[in-house]
Image 1 (cartoon, rainbow, N blue to C red):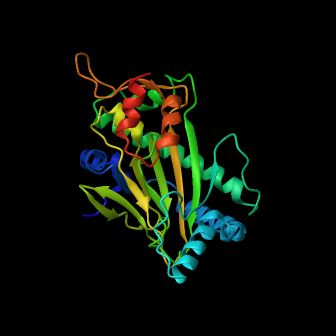
Image 2: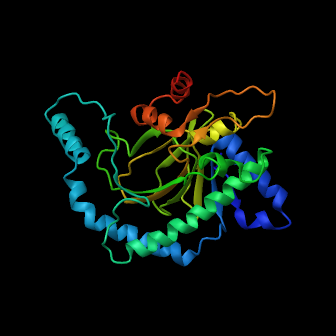
Amino acid sequence: MVVPVIDFSKLDGAERAETMAQIADGCENWGFFQLVNHGIPLELLDRVKKVCSESYRLREAAFRSSEPVQTLERLVEAERRGEAVAPVDDMDWEDIFYLHDDNQWPSDPPAFKETMREYRAELKKLAERVMEAMDENLGLDKGRMKAAFTGDGLHAPFFGTKVSHYPPCPRPDLITGLRAHTDAGGVILLFQDDKVGGLEVLKDGEWLDVQPLPDAIVVNTGDQVEVLSNGRYRSAWHRVLPMRNGNRRSIASFYNPAFEAAISPAVGEGAAAAYPDYVFGDYMDVYNKQKFDAKEPRFETRSSM
């Protein structure tokens, strides 16, 4: 099985119905799909790759002295002494920083801020187009998902970007790149490395590669899309495996509800809701403590509020 690859440009042409069906399949049966011909200029994607790779080179020394690296070194040394060691299960082999509208961005390389502002603006527009396709496939009014995420326009959605690198790992058997989890929010758009793999999605009990595809945008649905769709769409478990060779670049942007937004299943009159109503910020309080645990108890906890 291969994660679906969808030509997003066909959404506006004669093959619209087929493209919408492919998006529905990706949302309902995978929780993951890849978009090609998505409208983001390839020249911009090239600049994004360049500035993010340069930013890691400025951070690399700090990663080499980070807790994951030191922990792995201690395990390897203990193993050399003949001691039994167990894989690390409470940290990730990952260098990360976050971008959103209200935090401080790196000043180096000089082109970083301008490039990433331009990229985030394009990603936000793409996320809203994807959400409109989801609305249509779910039989909802156009803009229903965005309205839910913004409290009917009272609040701005939270749009964040996580810039990650997964450097070469000498002992991938002893630590994970990123532990298995589902994403808390809404629609996630990932610009992943086109050479170094490692991202996997859980499908029918089997971990499958999300194959590197040059200039594609990987889309996955978060927990809030699962709730809004009343379970028709599912947030998918995914993880990143560390690699012995290659420095994996990963730029994930999250179109999430505002923390004040009230989230509830979009069901018709008389239909049963499979999930409780709650405020997204309250959900995040629980998620931050239980990110790597089963997701179902998070919904149950919210139902008691």
